[in-house]
Image 1 (tube, one colour):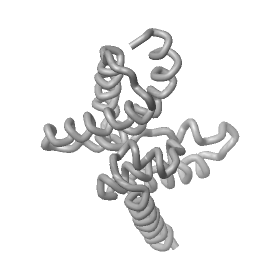
Image 2 (spheres, helix red, strand yellow; image 1 turned 45 degrees about the vertical axis):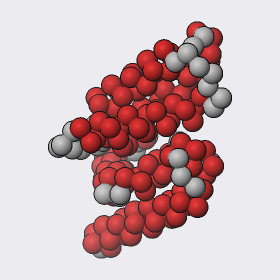
Image 3 (cartoon, one colour; image 1 turned 180 degrees about the vertical axis):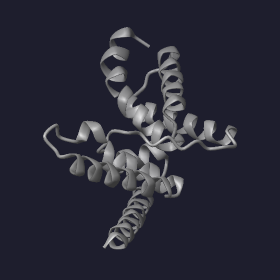
Image 4 (cartoon, helix red, strand yellow; image 1 turned 30 degrees about the vertical axis):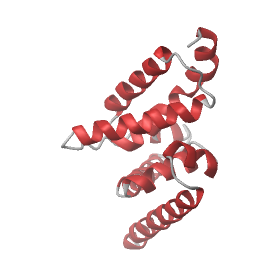
Length: 167
């Protein structure tokens, strides 16, 4: 691969690749390793890549799933990004509440089946279109829509149960 192509098409999406890998394997360190392997594969690839982003996302997905299959025990590593979302002027109570809400969302998403979790990550976090997701996951647009609907419904149901329990 040409340095210019790698620099302008591949490197800007490395954070997306990381978030996608992390959502699948649920481990930050393993996700970093996966992204590094994908970037190395892309760099060494001799052919012409038409849609580099979709190609990289598919490679990340496949490698992440391979790592999960080879790893018998799953380690859940919920990323703590609540600090970056919390405003500096928020009270400690508001900060704790925001952190708890974020943790609940991550836990609800983590309980989803793998296909639904991947579709939700790509659509709601990364902002991919249905067609792009279908290309990355190698399935039809209808399957993407069904998985996304079911994922959102399950997460909403779990979050409503948590909210109603607190009342």
